[in-house]
View 1 (cartoon, rainbow, N blue to C red):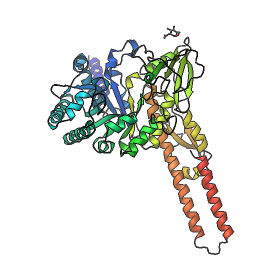
View 2 (view 1 turned 90 degrees about the vertical axis):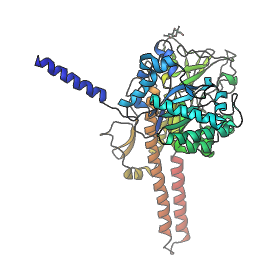
View 3 (view 1 turned 30 degrees about the vertical axis):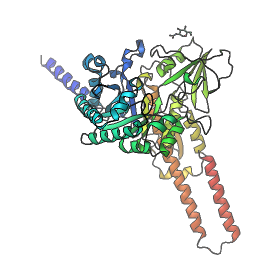
View 4 (view 1 turned 90 degrees about the horizontal axis):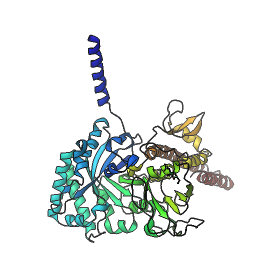
Length: 511
Ligand SMILES: *[C@@H]1O[C@H](CO)[C@@H](O)[C@H](O)[C@H]1NC(C)=O
C-alpha cells in the first residue's frame, strides 16, 4: 500500500521535473530565425509537418507563417482558423507554448507572404487612419495570442500592384508600429526581397534599419524556370561583377545603403529549384545558358511546380535505384543534380555552411531559414559527408602561417581533451580543426547552420588575432629603427625588405 503511494509520488515528482525542465538554444550568440510554413501540416505522408515536430534548440526565433490582412477592416486576420486556433487547441497556442520549455525562444507571427499580394497592404499603409486601425488590431492580436512580435512580409511595397509612394509609406508604417510596440517590448522584424530591383523601388533601407529589430533577407529565388535557363536558387556569388543576382551582392547592397550589419539576418533556402531541359541530349550543363522548359517538376510532398524541399531532394539521393548524378557549380557554390532531362539546383549542408561563413565574415546578426519544415526533419536521409570541406581547406592554409603560433598563445582556445563541442582546438601546441559530429539524426541543415556559425566565429577570432599580431610586429619594427641613427641605409633596407616579405607571406598564406 505504502509502496504504491511512494511510487505514485515519485512518478508525480518525475513528471513535474520533466515538464518543467528547460532547454537552451544555439550557443554562438547569433540569431537563428526559423520560419514555419504552417500549411506544411497538410502535406502528404512523411512531408506532413506539425508544430510538435519542431526542435526549438536549433532556433532563437520561430516565425509563424502566415497571418493575413482584412481588406475591409484593415485589421490583421487569421488565415486558417481550423489549423491556427481550433485543431488540438490550435497551432498558435502550440507554438507559443514551446517557450515554457525553451525560455530562450521568441515566437512571432508573420503577416503577408506571396499569396497575400501587395495591393491591400499598399492601401492600408497609405493613410494615417488605416495605419492606426491596423496597428491597434496588431496590438490586440499579439496580446490575445501571446506572440512576442510581428514580422512584416509585404511582398512587395511599390510592386505587384503596389504604388510608388509605398516606399515612403512602408517606412511610416514601420516607424509607427515600432513606437506602438515600445511599451510592450514586442519585436518588429520584416522579410525583405533580395532582388536589386525590389531593394531599389520597395525599400528605404537606411530608415527601415533604424526601426526594425531584425531584417530577414530573403536571399533565394534568384533563379528558376522563369529565366528560361538552368540557374542557382541562391548563388553565393554572381557570374560577373555586374551580376546583381547573388547572395553576396544583396549583402553588399544592403550594407552600402545604410543597413546595420548586426540587424541583417541572412536567409537560407531549405529547398531547391527544378528544371526540365529543352534539349534532353544537352551534354554540358551551363548555369545561365542551358535552356529549359517553362515549367519544372514537382516534389512528392510539396506538389509545387519548379520547387522541391530539401527533404524531398535528399530522398531522391537516398534512392539507390534512381540515377541522379551529383554535380557542383563552383562559381555559385551550388550543388545540383541531373537525371536525364531533369535538373535540381538546391542547397545542401556544404553550400549552407559556405553561406553561413559568408554571413559571419560580414559580421551579420544571424541566419534565417525558409523554411524549417522542408529540412529533413524526420532524419530519413543519409548525411552529406562534405559539409565542412571548405572549412578544412581554409584550415590547412592557416596552419602554415608563421604568425599562427603566436596567436595561439594569446587566444584561450578550449582544449580538445576537455571539450567535445564544435571548435578549433589546440593540442600539442598546434591548431586542430575539430569537425562536429552529428548530434541528432534529423534536421541536418539546421544543425549545419549552427555548427558552421560556431566554426566560422572561432575561425574569425583566430584570424583577427593573427592580424593584430602582424600589425603589432610592424610597429615594433618601426620603433626599433627610430632611435638608432647609426643604422646604415642597407640595414634599414634589410628591415623594410624583411617586413614586406613577411607581410606578403602572411597575406599569401592567409585567406
Ligand atoms: C526510386 O527510383 C526508382 C527509379 O527512378 C523509382 O521507380 C522508385 O519509385 C523510387 N523509389 C522511391 C521510394 O521513391
